[in-house]
Length: 289
Image 1 (spheres, rainbow, N blue to C red):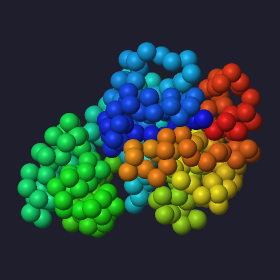
Image 2 (cartoon, rainbow, N blue to C red):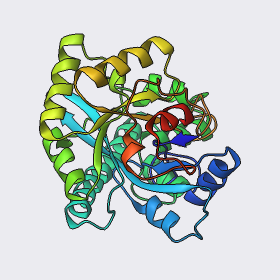
Image 3 (cartoon, rainbow, N blue to C red):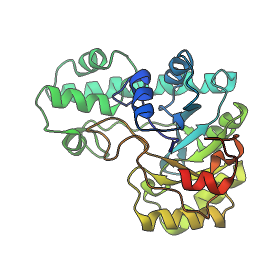
C-alpha cells in the first residue's frame, strides 16, 4: 500500500510523526509521504528515527499557493528538505500563517471568545496554528459540536473568523519544489470547484511550468472522479499520485493508506523512484497502490 499525502501535528494533523509512522506500519504501508502544510519539520523528525526496511519514507510538503483567484495546494514529493530555496519559502509561508492565526484570534475575540489565539497555541503546542487547531479549541470550549460546525459557523470561507491569505503564486511553488529536486503534484484537483474550462487551463499552465502530476486518488475519491482524473492525466501527460489526505481520526473519513487504487492505465508518480516491495514494474506499482 502507498500513501503520498498525509499530515502530522506539525501542521493540521492530530498525530505526531512517530505515531503516524506507527499507524502506517500497522496498516502495512510500504511507501509513505508526510506532506504537512508549508513545513518539513515533521519530515525532519521522521528522518531522525530508526529506518525500517518495510516502509520507505518520501520527504514531502504541501505548499499553499494562489492561481488566479483560487487558493490551491501543490505537493512537493521526494524533495531535499534542506534545499535553501525551499527553506526560504517555508519561512515566508510560516510568517503568513502566524499573521493569519493572530487575525483569526482577534476575530474570535470580537465574537466574545477570549484569548482564542493564546489558548489555541497552548492546545497545539506551537504558535503556527491553523483553522483546524481553532476548531479543536471551539469544540473543547463548547462553542460548537464538531469540526464541521466550527467551519460552518466561524472558520469557513465567508464566516466571521475567516481570514484570507495571499500565498505564493503557482509558478513559485513549482519552481521551489523543482529547486529542491522534487516533483510537483496538484493535490485534490476537484476540491477547488473549477469549471471544466478552468480546470483544463489550470492543468495546462501547471504542466507548462514543469508540474509533474496530479492526485488521481485523493481521500475518499469516488470511482467517477478517479476515472475523470485518470483521463486528465493522459490528456495532459501527467503522472498519477495517490494519497489519503489523512489528518487523524475524527478529521478524516478514511484511514491512512485506505484510499482506492489507481487505475491500471495510470503511470504512477513513484514509478521512477526505484523498486517498492521488490519490483520496479510500473503495472505492479499501479496494482499495489
